[in-house]
Structure formats: C-alpha cells, structure tokens
Amino acid sequence: MWDLWAEEKASSPYTELMTYESEINNGGHMQFFDNISNTSDLPQVISVLYTILNGVLKQNLVTAYNAYLECEGKDNQEDKLNEILDDCDNVFYENESEIEQILKGYAATIDL
Image 1 (cartoon, rainbow, N blue to C red):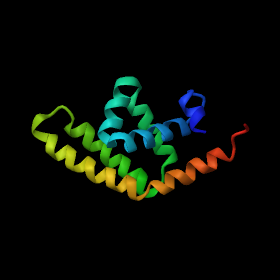
Image 2 (image 1 turned 90 degrees about the vertical axis):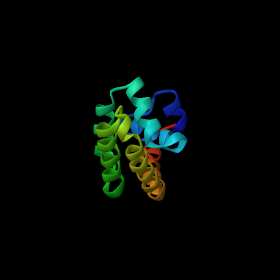
Image 3 (image 1 turned 60 degrees about the vertical axis):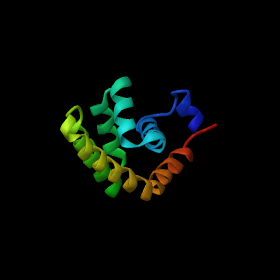
C-alpha cells in the first residue's frame, strides 16, 4: 500500500490520508500545511481529508487548519499558531490508530 502511495498510484482519499499521516509524523501539522501549500491545492486536500476522517481527527484537522489560515504569515500570531498546532499534533498522535484502521481497510481491497 505504501509502495503504491510512493509511486503515486494509491487512490483518493487514501493518497491524501497517507500523505497527511506521513507529514504529521515527520514534522507535525505545520509541515503538512506548508508542504501541501507548496505542492498542491491545500483547500482541496483538506476537503478530501474531511470526507474520510471521523470524529476527533476530523475536528482536530478543522481546528489546525483554521488556526493555520488565521495566523499564518502574521508575526504577532506565530506563538499562538505553534501552540495550537502542537496541541493538534498531540491529538493526532493520541488517535492515530483510527487512521491505521482506515488504511487497513483500504489495504484489504488492494489486489496485488
């Protein structure tokens, strides 16, 4: 499954979910937002993630994204943004098993 993702052959919304998980585990929400903003359409990726995430993780993504939009680029808001995103990173890590369950379900549908 991760090989398909690396080869850009995984299907949506799982591609976006794997990218989200990878980026968060590699540098948190700030890295995710910055990298996606530089390489893709961030609002579109957020919209896709919103369709696959549930409950706490969905709300956490909304909280992180809203803070990013509100504070990014404003020098006087940098500390506030970092604090919110750090909290969101922690919520993600505490609930990451939910993402693993979604991805396991996807993996079960892949014919190798």
